[in-house]
Amino acid sequence: MKIVSPKYDYCMKELFRNEVVRRHFLSDVLDIPPETIRSSRLLNTFLWKRYRNQKLGILDVLIELNDDTKINIEIQVKVSADWDKRQIFYLSKLYTADLHMGNDYTCLRPCIGISILDFNLNGRPEYHSIYRLTDAEGNLFSNMFEIHTIELKKKLAGQNRVDDWIRLFNAETEEYLDMIKTKNAGICEAVREVKLMSLGKRLRAHYEAYLKDMRDQAAREKYVRQEAMENGFNKGMEKGLEEGIEKGIEKGKEECIGIFILDNMGEGKSKVQIIKKLIIRFNLPEKDAERLMDKYMNNVNSTR
Image 1 (cartoon, rainbow, N blue to C red):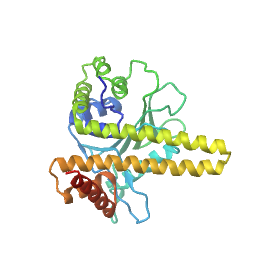
Image 2 (image 1 turned 90 degrees about the horizontal axis):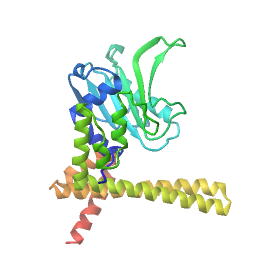
Image 3 (image 1 turned 135 degrees about the vertical axis):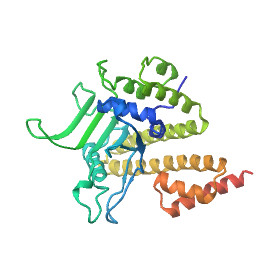
Image 4 (image 1 turned 180 degrees about the horizontal axis):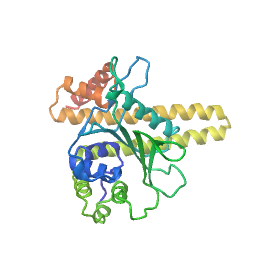
């Protein structure tokens, strides 16, 4: 039976709401005993801006440990240009987020970025790589920055603590989940959570909308490329591709927002509550959130 893929970012966020899953995933990736992680808590994933024209930082999953170490977990399903620069940008914002005017540097805490990548970052066979600040001889300069990459497409060696987590994220069916034989409590809990989520109609609707958006976007990109190549206008291809992608992303995003609004209306949430959730969840300006809310409320009323 098909399941909601753990690679789907909404599913991943729901998975890491479970503290058992969080603790054991961090234990396996960071190679520390799970009992040393007494507790972990999810934080607001929006990184504040110092200046009006500064780029806003939005993380996938942000966790804080007992020793105040901050950990950002993200999943990337498509190759992204300048991914390395983007990763350093977000980690840097996370590192400086607590440094306010008048503070000294003692308030800065270690930051760890864990990136789960559904593509090969390099040609090396290692699928779990760790990057730290060191000198040319490998001596540690500072423990304040650490980046982990987990590449899902590479062949498993069968001896790494993250192997079963990779199998979990690559799972597409319930039968595949059942083939993951482990005594790891975090993996077992994650398998249970994925099965439960796959039964939920609302998450399934979000997931199907997400898949439709991905398929439609790929089809639009292919069509624009073919049209541009047939006409022989390279400039037209670049412009058309950019416009096609932007329109596709906006359309897919609005479809997901529509499902989100209807779900919340079905749960009895008020208009004001839903608008506030739209602003936070989708990073919308208040006017856009109100416009979309009115649009879908009118659609519901017109069908009654």
